[in-house]
Image (cartoon, rainbow, N blue to C red; front, top):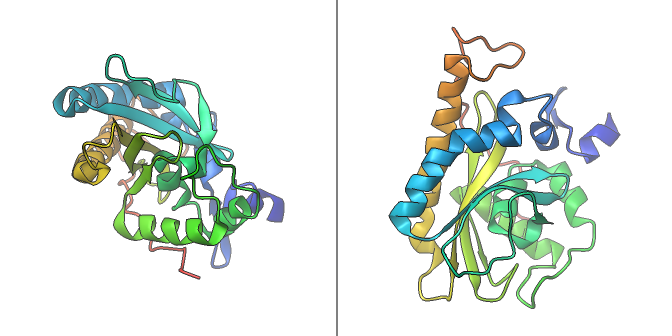
Length: 234
C-alpha cells in the first residue's frame, strides 16, 4: 500500500485509503476522465473562451509526474512549447502546479524529493520554494507561471473537479506571450472556465454519457468541493 501511496494511486485519509490523483488519469478506471472524453466535453467551452479572450487556451491532465496536454487552442503565428499529446514537467507549468497542489502532501513530497529540472533561468527548482507556491495555489484556487517553461510565456491555470471527486481530474489555462498583459488579469476567466467544464462533466454523468461504478444516470454524485488544504507551509 505504501508503494501505491508514493505513486499517487491512493492516498491515506485518516484510517482509510482513497483513490489518488494518478488514478484519475487512468481512463479505464475513471471513464469520464479519459482524455478523449474529457476533451470532447470541454471543447465547446474552450472554443468559446478562446474566441472571447483571444488568448491561448490549454486543457491538461497529470500523467505520472508530467502534464499531458489534451487540448490546445493557440493564436496564429505564436510558438508555444506545447502540443496535444505532448508532456512537460509539472512544476514548470501553471497547469501542473494547479494539479500538484491537490495531490496530497505525500505525493507532493515524493515529487519534490527528486531533482526539479529547469527549462529556463526562471523555473522554480528549489523544493521549499515550490512547496510554498503549491500551498498558495491551494489557498487561492489558481496557479501561475512566468517565464518558467519558456521565456516570454506566462499562464494562469485553474483545477477542474469531476463529479464526486475531491481531486482535480484536469486543469485549464490561459497562456499569454509577450508580457504586455499579466496572467492575473485572467484568473477569473480560468476559474470560471474550470467550473463550466466541471458542470459539463456533471451533466454528462447525469445524462448517462459517462458512467462509472456506483454512479447511475438517475442518481449521479454531486460534484464535490475541494477538500481542505492538506499542504501546510513548512
